[in-house]
Image (cartoon, rainbow, N blue to C red; front, side, top):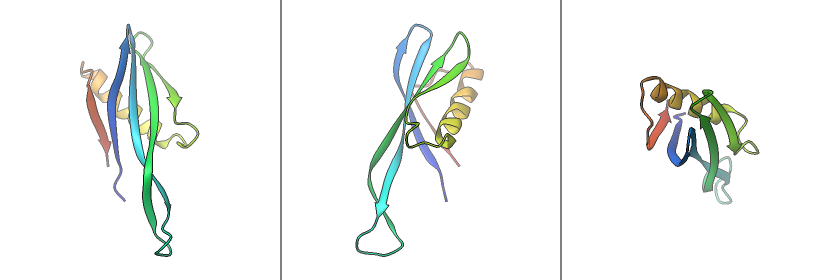
Length: 93
């Protein structure tokens, strides 16, 4: 199964960057058994402190078991290490 997580810069306040990421929300298909249909979108927020280099999971922990958060942090870390502060990026695997 392919994984795609779009990531975009929400706000920049001093040394703090806040990024949002989304994932599709699925529910059981009422017509076809054993299938899922996309019914919406789940949104998470990650705050990055440029001074300390630490990430904070601000929103999304109620539906994200940490897997999306870790992937978003890994993708952003690659950008930050190369001196980039992207407006938009994505994790894909």
